[in-house]
Image 1 (cartoon, one colour):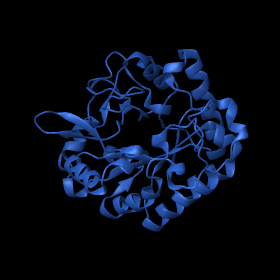
Image 2 (tube, one colour):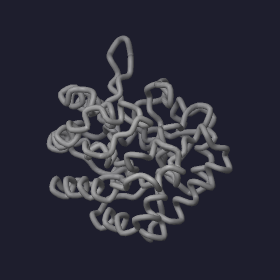
Image 3 (cartoon, one colour):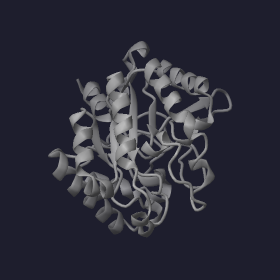
Length: 291
């Protein structure tokens, strides 16, 4: 029985949604060569999220940049000690669309080496910087499979200029590089797509997964979208970044405006969602589905 079938059999009232944290700092959208000149706030902000999750007794998947694992190994150990999953976010936060297959593989492997050395555990999953697993980078699926991963969580079924596969399945599915827009039952490798709310009849996808969209939309709309997803007996997949909990982090002109938009609203909205819905890590969710 495949994963999709197992999901359908679950009770909607008992759905565990998936929470993920992309562990990158406020400056990580900039060229990597500038990072060493900018203020590092990743530890304090990630630890702040850890305290919130501990208070709520919620587990999550932390997609960690290898760069920060090298720089702050004690932070990665702290995440693991709090019973969260460690996934890879690559090493240098470079979009897949800006890499060759060999460069991509080298970047991902480099992240695995440092993460697995710190945790002593095999990494199960990956999330692409800027969600750049798109149709013309579908080859990345084969690279990830060759490295022994079990899942990817990079596809966003919503199109903007940087990323998006608007016709992709809305819920976890078996993915193939031959066609990332459909479920491939013969594949074992899983895609855990970021959540959108699909407007009935016109079938237009509205992103509710987190990040800027959490800050932009009213919390009532985000909650409504999650409830509608759960009615289909599927989990909502949400994400956030540590820097989004830090409205006082440095502001520079070379960072786009939406990275600063309503940062002061993040924590309150985040805590509301944690109080209303059940959440877990991707790894725990997969293990529960396999029982």
